[in-house]
Image (cartoon, rainbow, N blue to C red; front, side, top):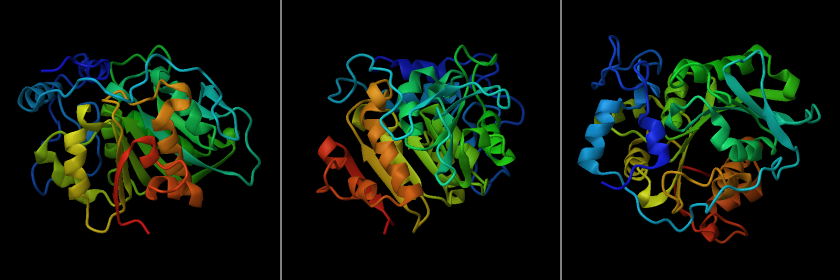
Length: 327
C-alpha cells in the first residue's frame, strides 16, 4: 500500500469519541433505510465510513499515491484573496466552535453574499490548513462558516451537527454583521471527511441548495443508495487517480438521480489538492468560478467550467472535466 498521506492520517486519527468506535445507534445502511437526518455517531455522518471499515476498504482497494504533477511545492503566500472584497478569518462569539471567513469590510447592501458551510479534511477541528483557499473564496463575496478554529474546539473531530450549526447561524440573522447574507443560496462544502460531512448535512435539509465535494465521495457501495435522497446539484473537484476520492467519485457521479445537474473535475494533485497554495491555487480558482456561475449567473465563470475553448478554462489548466444536465 502506498504511504499514507497527511490528509489520510488526519482522516483516521480519531479518538474514542471519533470515527474509531461504532456506538449504539450508529446508522446501519440497508436498502430502504433512509434516516430522518444525516447525523451519525461516526464523524462525517451517514455518508461516511468508520475507522475500522476504512482500514478494511484500504486493505482491499489500496491507498493510491505516487508522484503528482500539480501538487503545490511548498506553502503559498498568505493574502486577502484575489477577489473584489479583501477577506480574513474572524472568531464570532455567536458561533464559538467555528471560524468565519468573510470580507474584512461588509460589501454594499446591494451585494448579496451566499453562505457556505465548510468541513475540514479528517473532520478536523482546525480549518487553518485551508485558510488560503477559504480566504480566496470569501474575497469574491461569500461568508463561510468553517467548522473548528485554530487550536481545535475541545473534541477529536467535528460532527454533522457542528456543520449544521453554521446553517442555523446563517438563518438566525446573526451573520448579518458580515453583510447581506443570502440564506436562499446555501452551499455545504468540505474536503475529504469534511466533504462527506457536508453531504450528510445537506441530506434532507431543504435549506441547502448546492453541495461541493473536494477529494472525496462515498467509500462503501452499500451506502450509495443514499444518493437517491440528494436532490440538489453536486460538484466534485478531485485530485486525479492518485486521490483516494477518485474511484468513488467516478461511481457516485453515475449514480446520482437522473436529470440532476452534476459537475466533476480532476486535477493531478493527489488527495491534498492545492489548498495551501497562494489563493488556494487551481482548486481555489475552480471552486470560485463554480460558485460565481451558480450563485451569480456569471457567464464568464460558466464558460471557464463548461467550455474547454474559453479563455482560462479549467481544461486549459489541465483539469479533466465531465458534467451532465447543465444548460
